[in-house]
Amino acid sequence: MRASNNVSRVTTDQIMDLERYEAARPALAERVRFEKQRRRIHVGEHLTFLFENAETIRYQVQEMLRIEKRTDAASIQHEIDTYNELLGSAGEIGCTLLIEIEEPAERDRKLREWTELPAHVWVEVDDGRRVAGTFDPRQISDGRLSSVHYVKFVVGDGAPVAVGCSLPGIDARTELSVDQRQALMADLSAAAKG
Image (cartoon, rainbow, N blue to C red; front, side):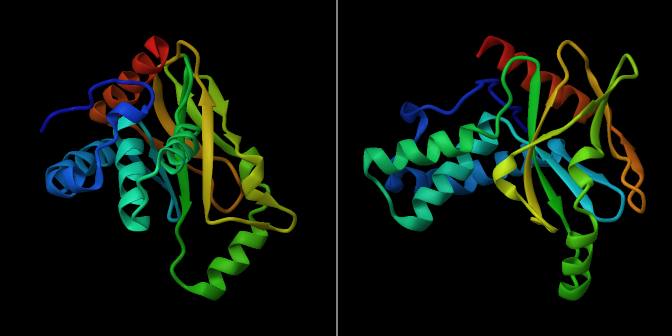
């Protein structure tokens, strides 16, 4: 399976028209599934971190345009701008954090109990530092978390080795596999060139 092309941002010239995208979609979906698998890190029972790169973001843009049947330049640019916000800049990695709790009543209770979660999420780098995540403030409200968050980690020159959460009741750390480390380092390298 081919790895990411290490482009740091999605641009309009990379977006296919709907007809071309429909034809290429099965192959692209398979490639993006591979990229997401390399960047999906489960922490504890309920947290999944999906680190994004230009390829996963480009696919999301194409899917949104496909679903909404939008082809005008302004709509395309809006989707690109929105999703590019998820990507890290130089020395930074970005992810979608999913709080996954199936049972609705339990999910609602936990999202109210875990309002301090943004202060307890981190990436550990190879020198032992724990880098706190920066959450998108538009997704945080008083008294309740969203089940989906966009988070960035400024790791600088550090190589990510683990992802974790220190919130009481969730306290967990997941060591990254060699493949996951390589994927995140490729993303950091692309952002540095970007």
